[in-house]
Length: 293
Ligand SMILES: NC(=O)c1ccc[n+]([C@@H]2O[C@H](COP(=O)([O-])OP(=O)(O)OC[C@H]3O[C@@H](n4cnc5c(N)ncnc54)[C@H](OP(=O)(O)O)[C@@H]3O)[C@@H](O)[C@H]2O)c1
Image (spheres, helix red, strand yellow):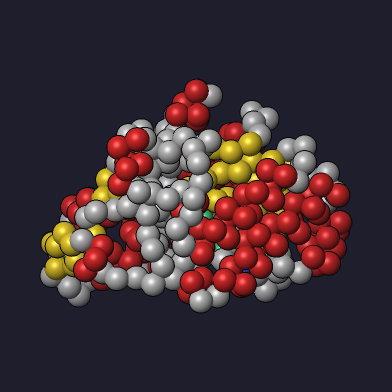
């Protein structure tokens, strides 16, 4: 079984490479400079040459606030790029694992009441920002491409040992601040890159196809998450709970980002508790820091 990873320098792409290397699984991996998924010819040429059994598309335009002013760029990668990858997979008979986001849902306070266990995979989508709209457009490509074997995995609040994410940002800021303001009115649960990779492979090996949510169990706010990060790391910085209105951002954010993992559980796949996942991540970050010091 041979894998091809796109977006291999991003946080999820790097986790995939780390995992495949550790398991001695055959793969080729490309960062954006070596494989630009918006370049259709290049996508076809590389798939023809590498003959992967599975393409894992970790490439994405993920700059949520910039996307508000760069709609074309976001759609070019998150919709048109996905189309190139899906068409090439179809042409060269490869399976496709692709990722999307909780931001395809509106995340209203009313939905928090309506879906206390989180949005199910088939809940109605209605993105409230350009990034979410571009990711939903990419989802539609997959749903309509008639590929024999595809997985569309939605994740939320993605965190891992590589690149930038909330956990690493909080720890960095805490190094020289006694108090950090964190929003307390946006709710969700983190997806951990290592868990996402393992679950993606598990679903693929079970011959599952279609949409799945892979995230942690347990609903928290960003402020709860920040407090847990500091408590578990022995950091003395305090979290000041603030409202989103006090932290204006260019793109609107959903208040409710919780994805239901009921479908995974129906397939007898264990779901990680968000707090246990954080322990694993902090332990990995500690090992990486020790190695680098
Ligand atoms: N991060 C989150 O909180 C989050 C939440 C929900 C869902 N997701 C989804 O999870 C997936 C993985 O996200 P991530 O956090 O790993 O993102 P990331 O760290 O931003 O990585 C995305 C990678 O894609 C590359 N890329 C951008 N345009 C490309 C192109 N045209 N061709 C090839 N590569 C390109 C980027 O390279 P450059 O840096 O060189 O542009 C970057 O290395 C994405 O589908 C994302 O939408 C993420």
